[in-house]
Image 1 (cartoon, rainbow, N blue to C red):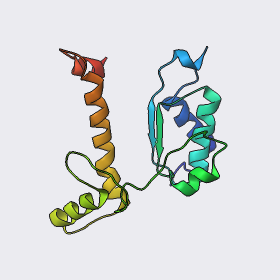
Image 2: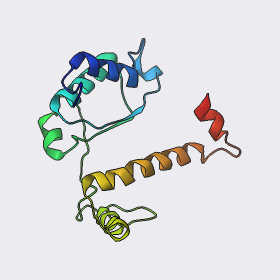
Image 3: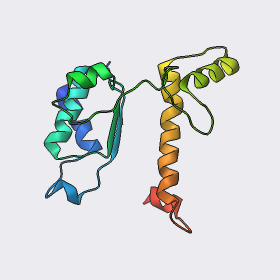
Image 4: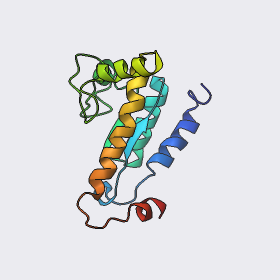
Length: 151
């Protein structure tokens, strides 16, 4: 994958996602960060740069977020939650599906192909974003949704 081993390029991406902060990190809004990464070089470079920048994301989701990876990187992150939402034993549910397996079964019924991890994540991430956006505006009587995202 182009640039996947280019540390300088990856540091630039990290800076764009969560720029260096001046003053106390507590005085800044920090984003939720989602990253599809393939290697330790990518994940490590991004995490190290965010720490260097004083970035404190409200959450980080990476494709390397397996229990094995988290346990091997406890020094990089003080607390890490990982799991396989695509696995039938993982108790996941929302308004549309009771489990990751239900997502795969539905996909197979519609397309003839069940899929796997990528299929469930392709469903789960937009749903997560939608839930966060809805909760952001749920306390407002007349929210300016379009204005918020265009300004």
